[in-house]
Length: 44
Image 1: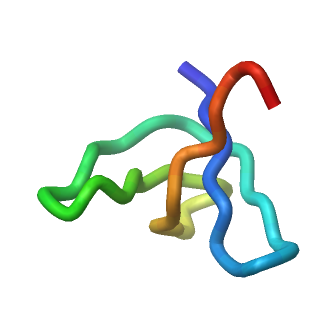
Image 2 (image 1 turned 180 degrees about the horizontal axis):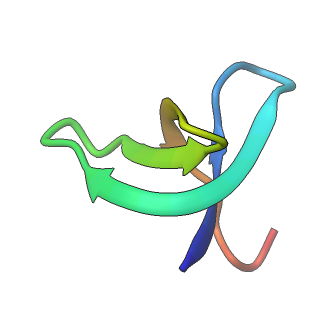
Image 3 (image 1 turned 45 degrees about the vertical axis):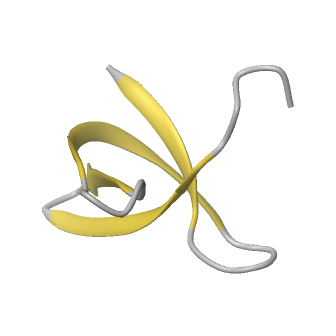
């Protein structure tokens, strides 16, 4: 499932969902790289 996370104040990354971290952040994978950030709401 594709998900979008905010890595910085103006950087968004969309990739394959990997896991949700205990602090509420989400991890996604793009081309073998993993990125963690705050999940972007579907209503945005």
